[in-house]
View 1 (tube, rainbow, N blue to C red):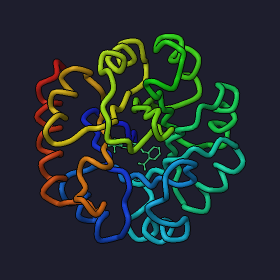
View 2 (view 1 turned 45 degrees about the vertical axis):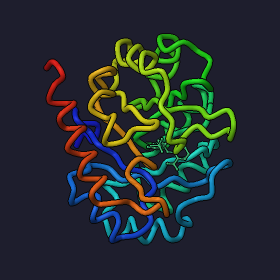
View 3 (view 1 turned 180 degrees about the vertical axis):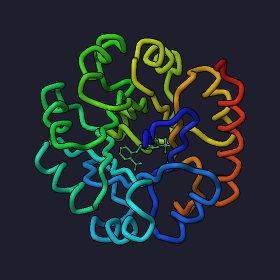
View 4 (view 1 turned 135 degrees about the vertical axis):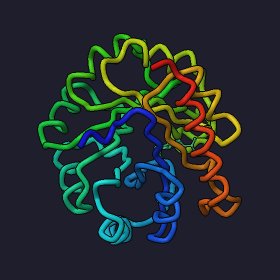
Length: 225
Ligand SMILES: O=C(O)c1ccccc1N[C@@H]1O[C@H](COP(=O)(O)O)[C@@H](O)[C@H]1O
């Protein structure tokens, strides 16, 4: 099954089985589990993530990580029983190739404001060694390149979409209020959100998730076939 289907919606930062079920029931396709993060505290431990994934089923779960060692990434995915990893670290194409050789499906991030290669060169260098790209936002104040709650210049993401032979997901500061416009501006294959569907205590809000899915779908429906 190709999990990178057009109109893909991913929600990151799942903290419990109940939260994961609620998010899937609202029409989300993939659940992201951010682990091994130098900047953020993790939402759950690796043991807890493994338990949640074990109940929800690994086929809809993605590990999101700054892990930059191919062997350790493979071991982490084996421990969690997932086969898709979102690689958020600024690894070289050679390292990504070694990660890919481990048999994983890989989503490589292009972090606007952090990654210095222009989109076209980035795509040329990395596309042979991954299955999809995701664009996200760098926050220079915290050093975070994910879960920042901040948008970036969507023109950069749109450029990456134009030159990529692979599906591109858009992330960074998406919310129910802006995801339709973001999809129209960038024409990505999918969208990904973390903080934009949470309440003030960091728990996923079912109303916000439902509104996000509704608005994202409206955005995808408006794209040219
Ligand atoms: O989700 C995280 O915690 C995370 C941590 C470190 C790197 C990437 C991470 N996830 C990605 O960040 C986006 C966007 O977050 P937000 O919507 O701006 O809050 C999220 O969807 C993940 O793909």
